[in-house]
Length: 370
Image (cartoon, rainbow, N blue to C red; front, side):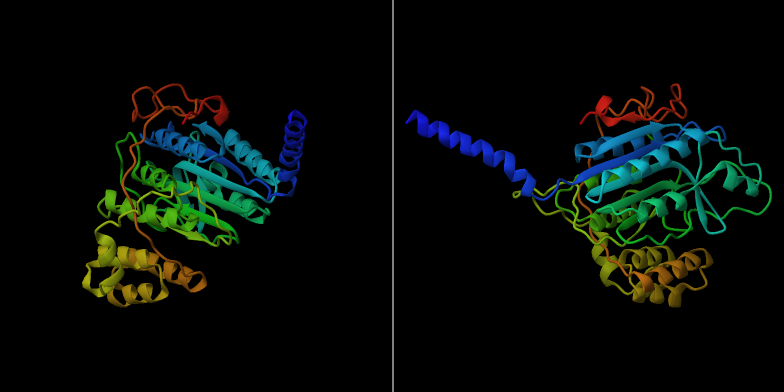
């Protein structure tokens, strides 16, 4: 009998060793999270905390997170390049995500993310002082990744007025490459409201939706859009565009988990004629539906609203190429807990520029806890 048991245990051990080689390869998850707050031309009260919250949430979702806070220009560029190289070496079964929180600026149709030492005295300084976001989106887009995610939480009012040509407000529309999702905290051409802290509405909403089990990647960002619009009472409406061709969820949905309840305004935005809203809510409804018909209806009704009509035309062009959809948003998650040492904000959250700035990236495994 003992010999039989030993034999069975031996067979089981062989099966345990052999089985993984024939199984599907394990999905790799890597992320780069940067929160720039201590700007020389105007500190931000939420971005370091926002980056810490997103880093913590991603680590809980199984990502190997590299986090950094308050990066100068050289360090920011080196950190982004190093992450692209890491994604390149990681292989085709990798989901790679970048989250940048700070000041984002557009000029001549290009988006730039500003390091904390940026000194933009003239409009022509921007391409030198800022980091052109498209360079890194394109680099990720050319890699054979399972999915690439690039989030720019940077559509804010800039605290300086450079000489020369006036800079356009908000961020410029971006077309994602295949298997890429690109997201902004505010729709192209618009900016988010000033927030006192300790956290921004977009980072809070994104963390909430990431933690909702079973949501497909596009649904996470569609629900984030509606949740932010709800939190800010229409003052901020995020944007995303995606060409994701693979299934991916941050967290699996528990079998007994209840379905998320939609916010009250979703039904109206989806069903009522766009003409029945005022200009602001009509714009929100068109973005929420994210269809060519919705944008056409908005432009027919509110072409005289130049600020929103300009963005509406850009959205209409995007919808013609890649129509999307909308979803709903669930309950809010309260952000708590420690964050990565290199992103860690001052002990009093929300204090602009508090604590000594750190520019050295850190691995989530050395200080980011769940």
